Image (cartoon, rainbow, N blue to C red; front, side, top):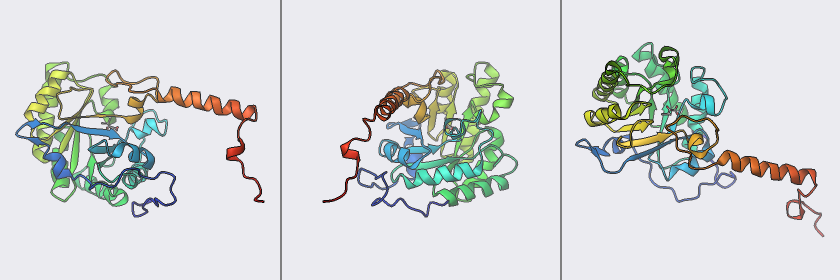
Length: 290
Ligand code: KIV
């Protein structure tokens, strides 16, 4: 599938409502942090589908097609099994459903770690297939040469440090990072390495707050926190988590709604109406024309 298939807004039931705005660009996102200060914090949410992208788009600066779709959409136990095809298909859908936010696609585990050349091939495939503007990859200092390689060949990269879920088998779980001095200084030096390599922004996930603040104050590009600090230059959450689609969410998630409860209630009403033959009613039934 490719982004060259545009949404047909005359027939799609997922019509974009507001008038198209001009899409933000990576340099404009990067420039939101000036001389170490971000007056207008960056708003990022995950999106995996076209309709979800339409609903989030005007409220966000960035839409992240996160590899968290492995758990959220596919019911996988971690992000490890996520494939390039999954990222390409969902990335293309999100680009089709948005016109304002910068769309960033996660590079899945195994698609970029072995060499900068492997990373370039994978990232180029994702940008071509989706129409997204940038990729995100996980890892610290070891990934700096790869970020430099991609950036200097036309591929903007968002970094991701701290709790890096693709490394769950090395980290041994999803606990917050940066509690020991060694871990704390490694997270800050990782962020500095990515910044110097040309990352246009860096996600800081699941770290104790002073480390998130230290990294934010040290790097020149914007930091985007998740389980980090309100003092980061922006914030991201998994949309389904903040909407209340799941009972169990990490502690750093604020549930802004109870969408799971709303869905269950609505489906129970539907099921009751089907069973009592109250649905379909007259309004939903075709009769012969006289
Ligand atoms: O995959 C993802 O959704 C992410 C965010 C949680 C930062 O990487």
